[in-house]
Image (tube, rainbow, N blue to C red; front, side, top):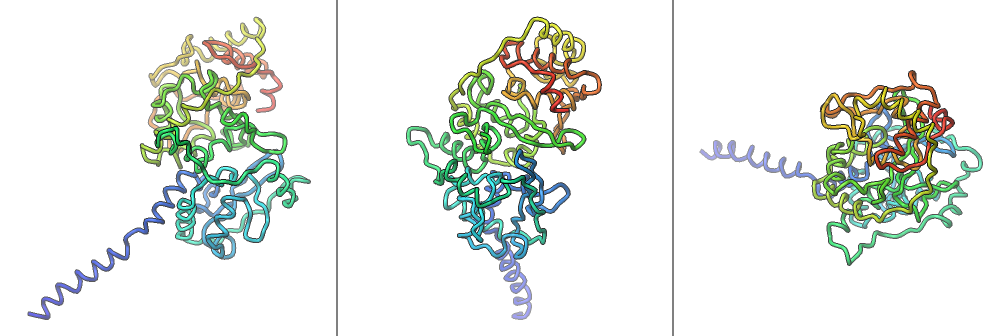
Length: 408
């Protein structure tokens, strides 16, 4: 009787002990979520490489940088780093050996991360399986290959400090501000930079540039749109429009393509509904950026652009530029932040190469757009782009054939 009872009880005790041992560490789970919010995997994972093992190349005006291994490998990763080492790198851009990190690692935003979130990120990264993967040597041009000079750069352009909420704003707004400004580091791509690569503090979120692949794999400059409430930005988008885009990759205006694919697939769509909506609330509240001076294109260029549009584009995008939700139609071009971006690079890339769509693909919605680079000459694409940027209420500068040639 006793033996039978023991045979029944002991497995139950063992199961209970095993279940208890497998209970996820709350700090690890919290850190995992924060790493998603920061989109760490996109920058620290090369194509077909192991997650967080680094080695992804970043083409910059100053040379090529490679992301580092942030797995806990003791030789090639952060296995020997203490939490203090990690927090110092996260918030000040300094390695344990005292070397400065290039601001391609956005410590200018991560400096705002809270103590609790920095701790959780460290615990999560330390929980990963170590991967032995040394980062390739950076290929920076002189004098940008002199890391010591980054100390002077920081003196000029970097201010350390944690996020401080606005007590006059509701909790949802402050949560969104924290996510956008700190973890998601949106301004790293959506702010223009000066000749030394520092963000323009008075034009934050008004659009910038980013180098990424076009279909075929060649690296080209992409422009990021204005995320303020300017007419050339998100003025026409509601909070729900922004929420839908970040959560699903599409809304009534557009769907994700190009460099935003990884942001949405690896980060924002995996965040909680409340966090995505908080980000949307904050973004919608941003005051409009200062209007740019826009030169009026000539009647001849507009006529040439309209002719190209009617022949090549009007059937899908409609004469109104509004498109529709039919799978045989095209996306909306009126009120488009991408069409009206200060730098027309993304618009030109889309016309030449077609839009790089997310992988895995979203359910079919619009007719897939082909590239027109083999059909249209540079001056035709310039005229078409100019027409798109000055029609249906759009208001952006004309595009030149030289700008098109640069994106070829």
